[in-house]
Amino acid sequence: MEEFKTQINKYYTAFQKLRNEHTAVTQHLTNSELAFSDVHRECDRCKGYKSNENALVTSLAESENSIIASQQKYAKDQITKCIKEIISVQQQYENDINKLNTTIRILEIKNSALQEYL
Image (cartoon, rainbow, N blue to C red):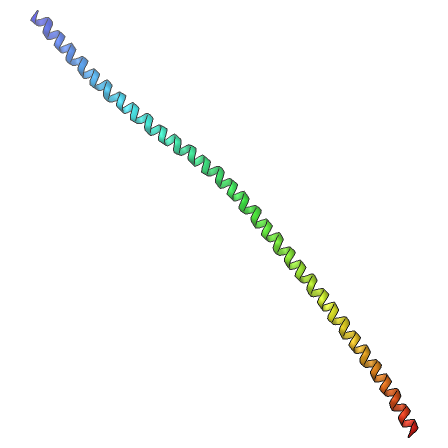
């Protein structure tokens, strides 16, 4: 009977040891699952950042294109305005020259008339 008790104690001790190992492995598995869950959640979050990054890059490219188009339109408008102003000044200059030439002819005619009169 003593031998039987000894054998039962050995089995009980082995069982306790296995139970402790099982508890430790279960705890380790739980910790690993939590760590994996955290890593998975971070990975999903990073995927969200990647899609946000792509959206922001696209938006930035569209904004840059819009700014470039606006700058080109502004430059074109300014050039058109300058050309119109140059044409206006040139026409005014030509008008002034024509007026002065007319005045010169009138004065020359008056001068010739006065010279003939004298």
